[in-house]
Every structure is written in structure tokens, then in C-alpha cells.
Image (cartoon, rainbow, N blue to C red; front, side, top):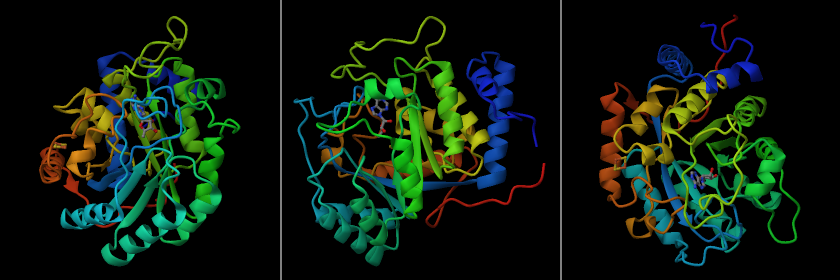
Length: 357
Ligand code: 5AD
Ligand code: FES
């Protein structure tokens, strides 16, 4: 066992986030990769991402799908379209589908319950939901219908920053996403969360706190990607304050790798994707480098190609114009190119028995 992050303390994590020495960083990548191999193995699990709706009632300051953004042409997939995507997932040998959307109450509880039941009965896939903050009754019914996992990034552990970038829905209190993640776990979901790297106002200290909160919540899945400015949003237009001189985390590729690697070391058995945002800022090698520095999951886009450009959370998103067939071949090629193996089966969290240190 390496002596990396022995105490998993805030000071240590922040120190690593600030590390610039190439030799030391190389040690960090190796430690993360070693831990990944030992705890979750060489398989890279494939989760087919189905972007089922781009309607959203929220006004998150970073997101291109925010309610106030009137230029977005909105869509919601039909039941048949969703089931056709699930069929493709089986054909491509993905073990999981992820149903993702904005916070869209046009997605009715019973309508989705029926779709989840149908996917479970016909396709034997793991089903992950990523639909924003829904009431407990919805979450419970969907869990009982067979949904296995739920993704909800808490975006930042800092309450003040959270409030700035994620204003509450009309007439509602500011939400508590860590509390919601605990509820999801209590309902029997595998729970996933994450943050963006380099949002304006995010200090090194805050990002270090975020990483330790991943551990504290005992998350099953953790997604981190760089913040990418969307010009039609307050954060993208530079309307929100940066952290003070020397404190602001840059939204760079390198900082994202540091965050992925530290996340792996702090949460050694979590499923960690190499994200689309990372592939967007380095289309040539972002996916592979993420996988080599701690990640073990890829989420290929399975949405019908004609809708992909409309799911514009941030600009120039990777994999929006290729046919789904190409994307899956490309992904598997990328995985094999670095000596890894496309995963089979649902690829849920494996609880490891950690050796005594
Ligand atoms: N840049 C990068 N990631 C973003 N997300 C939303 N907007 C952006 C952006 N501009 C991330 C958020 C959200 C996830 C679905 O996408 O973390 O939870
Ligand atoms: Fe999507 Fe290459 S990763 S086409």
C-alpha cells in the first residue's frame, strides 16, 4: 500500500490539488491506476446514456438547459424511443442504461415506472436514473419498479457557492443534495454524485472538501469533469465572482485528472467514469487519460442522433454527431488501446474486503 494520502486529510488533498511537479504528479497517476486495478480491476463498464428530455424547471447558473434559456428547442423521448435505445444497449453489450434528463415534471411518475419495469423485464439491464431532485414518492416507486442506481451531483460542498450556482426552484427552499443522496441509499439505490472542476468561486479548499465528502457519503459512483463555459449562462458569461487570487481552481484538463486520481485514492472501490466533459476538452485522448488515472467507467451516448445536439449542457460536447454504432465501436477501441477490457454484466459496485494496513 502506498503512503499516498495516508491520513486523507484536507491539507493533504489540497496539497495534491496544488501539486505542479511533473515527477510527483506521475506518482499520483501511478498510485491511482494501481488502486483502480487492485480494487475494481481492468474491466471498463459501459453505461449507455439516454438523454430522455431536455426540459428543465431549474435555473442552474452553469447549465445550457436552464429554464431561462429560451433558445433551446425542447424535446422529450417517447416510450418507444426509450425502449429502442435500451434494445441498442443490449445489442452493444452494455450492462446498464442511464436515463438522464433536466428536472422535468413532464416526466410523470407512473409513465416512467412502466418504462423501468419494461426495460427490466425485457432487457435485463441495470437501470440508472439521473433526473434531478425528485420527491421521495417518485424515487421510492421507481426503486420498487426495479431502478438500481441514481445519479445526482451535489456540484459543491460549499453552501454559499451552491446557493449562488443553483438557485432553488420557485417557492422552494434551497435544496440539500447530500441529504438526498443519503435518502437514495436508504431506499436501496446505489448512489452516485460528483462535481465540476473549476467553476468560478471554487477554491482549492472547497474542492478538497468535495473530495472528502465523496468519501463521507460512501458513494458508489463519482463523476467529475471540467467546468465548460456555456455563453448563454451566468457562469459562462463571467457574471459570478472567482475565488480570490491564488485560491481559484482552474477548469483545466490537468486539474480534472488530479481530481479523478484523488477521488480514486479516497474512494478506492467506487465506479468512476471518464466523463464526456473531459473528452470534450481533449477529444484525442481525454477518455483514455481519465481511464489511466483512476477511472473505470465510460458512458457512451445512446440517445437518438437527431436529439443529441439539443442536449447542450455545455458547447461542443463530444460524441454528439456520430451515429451510435460508431460511438460504441470507437469506445471499445479506445478501451482496448490502453490494455483494458470492455466490461460485461451490470458492473455494480463491488464491496471489497480491504486488507489490513
Ligand atoms: N460544464 C461542465 N459540466 C456541466 N454540467 C452542467 N453544466 C456543465 C458545464 N457547463 C454537469 C453538472 C451536471 C451534469 C449532468 O453535467 O455537474 O450535474
Ligand atoms: Fe464517441 Fe468516439 S467516443 S465516437
